[in-house]
Length: 274
Image (cartoon, rainbow, N blue to C red; front, side):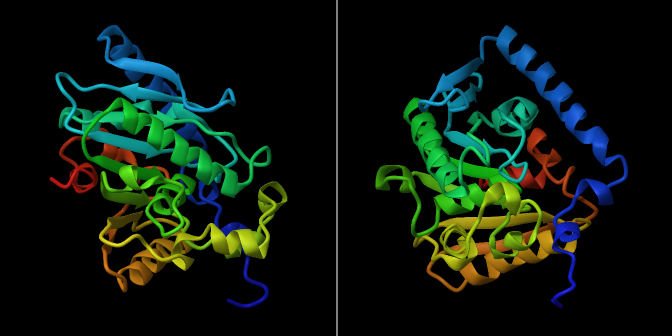
């Protein structure tokens, strides 16, 4: 990359997606409708606290009958925006296969540093795993993809009992190397320095031995997100674990997550090892 490369444009998604501004309200509407449905069915345990901050809460969606295990979805928004309320409908796919689904909120930048958010997500996963026995499957989108990848890196905040329960991790459109973000205007909010960027970049960390990771990315995404996903899979595949990448044709950064709402979509089936 030359010195004149536009890193802000590289990470800008909405500006390059037709109707990009329409997606957040669409997500919120779908999520609200699904929460209403699950509440009426008595299958939503909402706002479970996992920490001291008002944003340290998660929603737990329960399947019919005994849960086969737990899926955790971590939302994106460049660690600066959104909360759990916009993504509830993405629990549909795993629920159809009998898995419980936890979706946490977390304290955002600049109130928290990215390294702090990593610790929060570790605490949220640990709490949710205490509510649901069995295997744990992790997925997250964009910044959330970064966070779930951190959970299976060598410096994960998760304790060994939870690490041993993780069967599959699917970072979606994940940010594996945070160093380029220091060159964006967003860093006025992140306050990333070189040390934190390296320590919080999954692609620069060793993966835990024996993990199973599929980096999932849309074929129509900004090239930087394709590069980042491929980078993570390529580096981690050199260790004693399974790591690969799937580039889903035609999907951009905002619709690449849609498959989680469909129990038979390859994204859901990959996440659940079906």
